[in-house]
Length: 501
Image 1 (cartoon, rainbow, N blue to C red):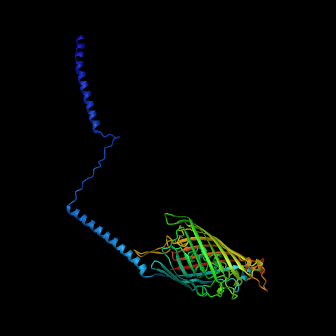
Image 2 (image 1 turned 180 degrees about the vertical axis):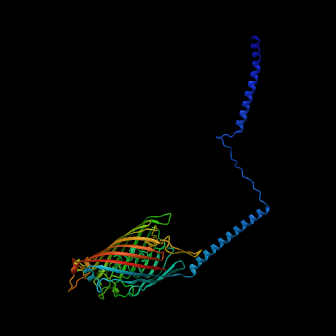
Image 3 (image 1 turned 30 degrees about the vertical axis):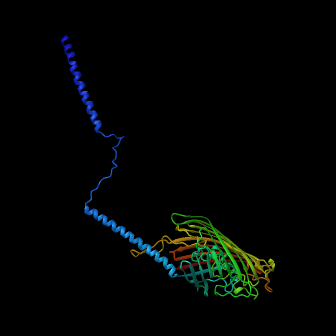
């Protein structure tokens, strides 16, 4: 036993040496494995040095030749574009830039009303029918980038009518433009707006006062309509009253008018899709002096006539020729809001007359007319605000009803553009009928009073040149004078097919 104990003590150093040797080898192997394994928290760095690519000499030369050709072509295209722009610029100074346009409106209407409406719609009473509302040719252009000119004639209705015939200067160094001839006075945004762009078939009762103020007359005008940004102004001297069927205006004494208009755009933003947000306000004033030496109005054009918002139907209110009208001060205010596809308009005019035949009104009758109108484009398009005239433009469908792909000559069809509109319009001529005596008339007509019209409309724009319109109007007229207490009520359904090119 003692010898065995000595044997174990002698074997212990050998066992300990073997254990330590094995442990050290395991530790060394583990360290080598750890060194070879990637560390997740410390990714390998990315090399930022550029790589060299070897290209054969032939390919490199071809690439350089191609690059030179592209640069040469780009320079040639740039020179060609600059030359073309210079030619276009010289063309404006060497030859007139003239455009001939045409339009026609084909209308149909059906009306019904009470006995008073049938009585007042003389001589034929209420009618159903159709007519070409407008067949107009317009020749318009410019030359030298400074001279403008226009001439238009309309064959619609039952007779022809001369419209615009004028010439003038614009882009003058002073910033003021000049116009002379036969054209619209600077009065009312609705009156200055083209009938091809209006939301409803006919303009409001305010437009019916253009025979007294705001229509087309011979005159001269200064304005800044070609350079305006947030405001416009215009002022002119015109004949006080004349018809559009003649360009002549002869009188023995007074027949002159001074008309001015000022507009401002307090807010304007153009959306990324091309639509706009705009707030427009404006005002106009006109002083008019009439010739009464010959005992007649100037060129028999001084009267008021109000139709039930349809040119086919006869007028429900009518003053006849106002031979006692000596002078007039007219005021007009306007405002419009465009918000994308939505449009809201308001206008009001006040006509303060001096008339010797209106004894019941102390010789100073007061007439007013106005409207409130709203429209909305269901398909998303919006109307544009025209800064150069302080008016509102029309609608161009994004997906026309019929369009042609010119590359493949394929015909496509879309919804076009759809618009709904509503307007309430009013006119008051009651003071012109005050004290009316059918035996010894001291005023103009018994068909005067207060007239109100509510109109709704639906427009279908096939493209920017063609549209169909559907209107319904409810009109009510309350009379003064000999027909005091009577009311005319009328329902009018109307439609229009419009082509402009």
